[in-house]
Image (cartoon, rainbow, N blue to C red; front, side):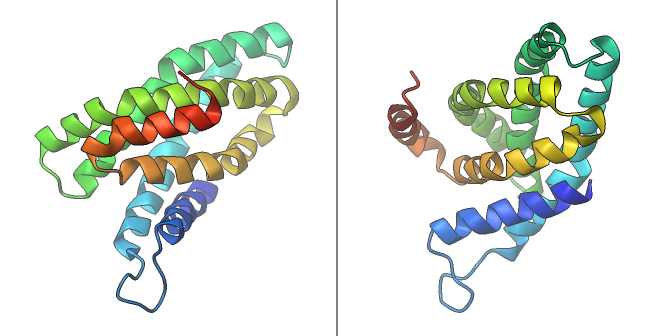
Length: 177
């Protein structure tokens, strides 16, 4: 849990730096935004990810390619969509947005985020399940998630209206349709 309590706010900080935020300026860092990311990472992502990895290891034990492919497939169609929807919805509520705005944000941002994630995370998950010992799986994913969480921070703070244009630009760079 500690790693996610550090990685998530650092990712928010990195993304804010890309946005042009600075320590001393009119455009200074939003420390509450970093705090929300830290709270979400440590109190929601870490326990749910740990639980998923534990359940997956019990249901499909071992590090074989077959077990890794099954765990990766199941994660991609179950845990990943659930985690992404929860992220947009939960973070919106932490920002004190009304329920309907949280739902609108999930509707606008889930699919573009999922497409990018589905092109990256299955490879990471397969490596994790096939080559990383169970006791090191959460730390391995924690390190990999730093860049992913920077992307989530970027997507989270896009205006809903800008999502189609920005995700098209990202897809072109990553060659995702």
